[in-house]
Image (cartoon, rainbow, N blue to C red; front, side, top):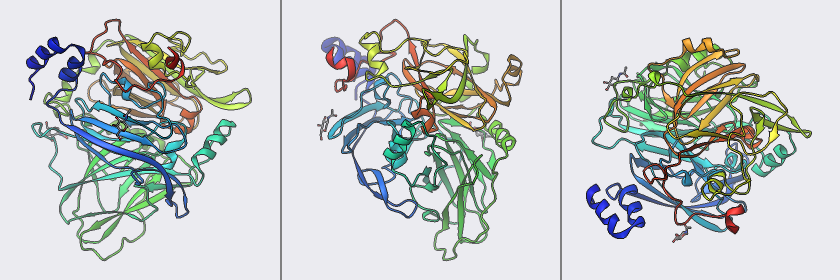
Length: 542
Ligand SMILES: *[C@@H]1O[C@H](CO)[C@@H](O)[C@H](O)[C@H]1NC(C)=O
Ligand SMILES: *[C@@H]1O[C@H](CO)[C@@H](O)[C@H](O)[C@H]1NC(C)=O
């Protein structure tokens, strides 16, 4: 095992290559190797055969179970007929924007070729997931659970569960992903999905078996593309312990809203007097009609099927949802990936350097529907933004093409970029004047959710911010005709996707990139491009 000092010494001897492997890939942290073959295959999630995207023949794909600071290597073999990338939803990619798996940071893996992702799950714990990032591919599958566990030397702020379960809730269309893409290309919005799935299975088929009186951890992710869900378990309550890498105050919930792209971790004790089967329910929020699916919580040995009625959940109840969201708070004394308490970063006392006000729109441009943020409807240029930035290729994008304030002009199709200095501390207000709920995800960093409110945001709303113990997350909802304010410390150099997690909206432009930059080139803040970097667009020719 190399100690830091020895590693640095070797670096002097051997130069850059060793500096990379000696310090950044930290020889003492374990390596997890995966080889994933991505293929089409037939799946029948709503009981009718359809084309799915499988990883190693599985739908959903394999689970990654990592420990903080593990190095993860995933060799992705693309056997589809389309270019492919996987993004690691919520994995922060510290110093490795090259591995983020979106078209703004890397070239796609062409059909019939393979490419190996290599990154470290640095200083992170929590429940995450991964999915294909290009086009509408993810509606066909290719997604899976990505769990990052505490190192054994770090104590957990909750009792040890007996076992844990992954619960991936997704929505599903009875339409091939390429047809959905064509539909969007023609400017036609997508209808409501045809149904909801739990772990890729039709209603009633996902079974989670546990023993009476034992405690179980449920890692729940909404890996869907369109609808927020409410999650609940018949006859049982859930104790929330973590959201997207932050340990929460351990409040007890009868049901929980999980917006598109979000993850929550709960503990459930199998304390029911009757050792039988109970329904697990996921139903859509803010939709008409309501989509509902079920799974089964089975007490080991039970032969008694779950009995209706299903537990009732909220349907529209916007105020209920906002109120619940505010109860999700940070346990300031608990540790997460590191032994220092989460509350030691006093986000509420840091001066905001810049306020950015982002509004989403849905309107026609040249006769076709486009979604936009501050009138920029993002398009991915053939040269990934990160590569253009690194290799100094002009003309690919403009810094600050997205203005800090809405212009209320006709949307323009262009790469959307907001430029920041490394370590900027910014306030972002998402203002939603549409009648649908929005969901925004940020790569590279977690942000603190300062507040939610109805109607238009005004500076007076700052008095309502939670500046003490809100949770940092990577995905946040913005309610219909409402605002959400976030605070973020941009400590991770790179080119980070800020996107609508509602995938048809992202597909038609509701996304941008946050360029986090400083002029000091240092491997402490950003790794060089990996040796296996894929080239495309203008970089190929350079
Ligand atoms: C492709 O896979 C082979 C092994 O199957 C591996 O040796 C090679 O490094 C991979 N290529 C890339 C670019 O990751
Ligand atoms: C907060 O975390 C501490 C561990 O530091 C734990 O003992 C306590 O129960 C947690 N409190 C709540 C309300 O979750």
